[in-house]
Length: 462
Image (tube, rainbow, N blue to C red; front, side):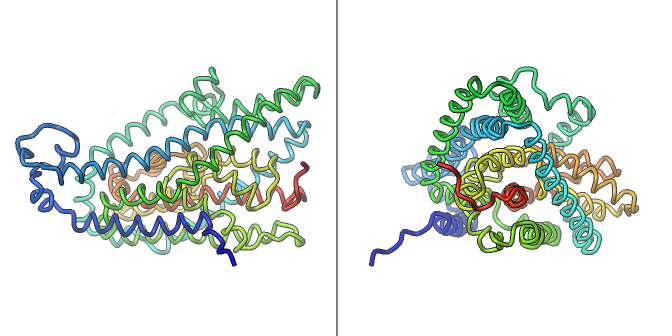
């Protein structure tokens, strides 16, 4: 009997585990003394290819170690670039097809209304969970003043840059932000991967196509369908390299960060991860179980088996935008959600549906308030929840973007923005976790909308 090949998501999970082990070993045992034994007394200069007399004794083994490190980083970053290369075309073509393919503005409004309702409902529940956890666990009470001051000093420079960016966004005002959703030059939005503007452009073009006679809009839709399918074929090819890329990305990250940064703020990290786990493992399965038809019930196991490749890639890349093509593929091919719904919901979710980010923002702000001994009133707790939900909607699906938006929420309740430095110490780890929830939330919305339309699991016409 011929043995079945190992499924892709198992390969990715194995690569993830191996990357964690390899990164931990490098971080633990590849110390400055090892570099010194190879003739490198200034590793920073050596790794940056800067001339230094301290590294005059560096020989072939040191150069080989540097080459392996650079090659590892190259493979991981190349994979992410390939996914980001196709992320914008996926949004444009899939959303145009989804909107124009419906052919009826009222149907678009119905599906769009259900999508936004699902986004809003899951976001509110995530914020409530975050407030409840932050208020009951009080993670800020577990950090000593010495640890707080040490972390702030270590990340002060990077923190100042993030806070300055947040001030610029805040000074622009809400109306400027809303105007910024509609691009004055859609090609500039595409060139700079401004995903909110790209979504708006594709949506408006799709609406325009619905207003044309079918004989006029048909060739354009067919053109977009062909390009969308070509891009998805590229996704399938790129995903063959996913296990190797995931190993490289995780190994590089863990080798640099290690686990030491987690020790001082362990209670905070556990609080965030616990909240994300409740959303992912309780809220989402319950929502799908309640809102999918009895004849084709979306079970816990079926959903997570179907979304495993997207979830593992989301964890390793920390980018919902880069994961978007794989999210679409998993929702369409593995969860059996119709293309017209997947193509409509997933691109919108990448910019509008950020449950994991909202939960992270709320717990982080409450954590910092407790850390600085600031007692927030009930009204301020409500302000934190509302502000976190608002800024989460506009957070780009890129690594570390939510830290910038956090400064706005901190200022809204008078918590010192210098506390962002403490969050930065562990942000990448938590970013990897919350990206899984953000990506899974998009797929949940696809399932719920398809279930309400009675099309979940039905074969599409040839």
